[in-house]
Each structure stands twice: as C-alpha cells, then as structure tokens.
Length: 185
Image (cartoon, rainbow, N blue to C red; front, side, top):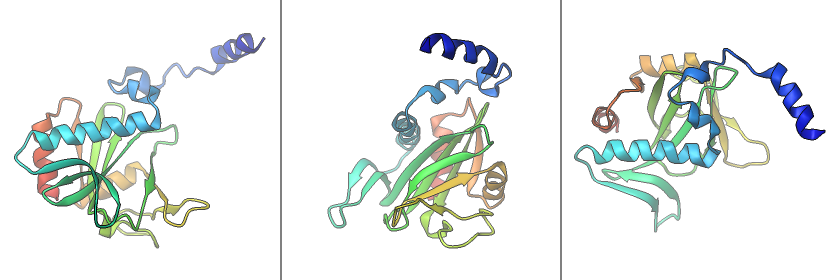
C-alpha cells in the first residue's frame, strides 16, 4: 500500500522539463548537505593547490578555537556550496558573524555553470539591507549567531557588478579558478 501509493503519486508529480535533468551537475542534488559542502571545499582546495600559494586545510585556530575550511596566505576562508532550487535561489546556511573568518567563498551551481563569489566577511550585511547584496542575512530561529543567506539571480548580478563574483563555465580549469580567487583575497 505505501509503496504503491508513492509510485502512483510520483507518476503524476514528476516534472518532465526539470532543468536539472540535462545538467552536468545534477548528481549534486542527490548528495547530503555535508556531501555538497565537501564538493565545494574540494573544488576550492584544488583551485588553490593549482597555483602558487600557502594553503592549509581543516584548520582549528589554537588561539580562539574557531574552525575554518582553509587558510590561504594567512587569510581564513569558509566555503559555502548551494544549488539553484525551485524558487530560483541558492540557500546558504550556518554563516556566523563572530566566526573570525576573513572570506566566505560561495559556490553556487546553476544548471549549466557555476557562480563563485569571494566575499570579505566584513561586508556581509547582518543587520540591515545592503546596496551590494540587495538584502541582508537572516538570523536563524533559536540561534544567537547562525545566519541563513539566500542568493537570487539579482544578488549574483550585484556581486558580479561589484567585482565580487564571476560566472565559470563547466569547462573552467582549476588554474583559472585559482588565479581568480587569489586575486580576490
């Protein structure tokens, strides 16, 4: 009964023209949140390893106890990975105002390309709507310092216009990404 009902409803609810069906990145949707995060961290790690720089990964700061995805040329970096959802937005979770991170790299997968933003945490709008982002981060319920930050196509365009983001094709090389990132930090 349970499986039959699910299969019956599934037949009427499948979106045949789902844009992810033809995406080279569609497997991303099958991964857990942690799995998607690891994809983003690995992409950024490969990019920095492809160019001359000093990189350390999975860092715990002995002075303040904070954890970072990586440290590049003495800048602490967090990586946030998202994919375009049914509302045409990219949802980023667990952004902390007091994490003492220098940069957040947002990796946003679209159907055929990837929008990467490299943002100094000092300009992330936690308190009020900002001209660059066109919005502010949202404090999660029952949290003192855990924010959600959703990006829209307009947010991406604003970041691109302010030289904080770039669109990369699916054929971009790790060297191209690494050079762009190192020039951003």
